[in-house]
Image (cartoon, rainbow, N blue to C red; front, side, top):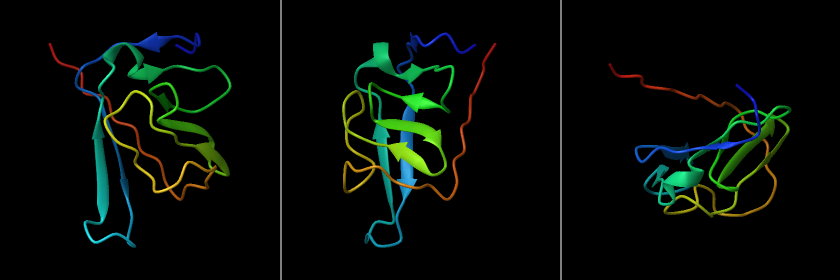
Length: 91
């Protein structure tokens, strides 16, 4: 549902791969669980208040806010090559 509201989860994390770094990836776990996920009507998936916002593949934004560390070296707009979102649902 895309109602522009935040959803709470304590197990959420975001990550990115970067071939220019020695560790090759950045993993960031949610710190403010009340702002873990945001469902937006006219955008793609959003995580945190601004930690990762996928507007479309040519304009995206990333700024540390609700997750433990930034997953990019800069806070500029960026272009993504790929984006995958997984949801694990338990009984």
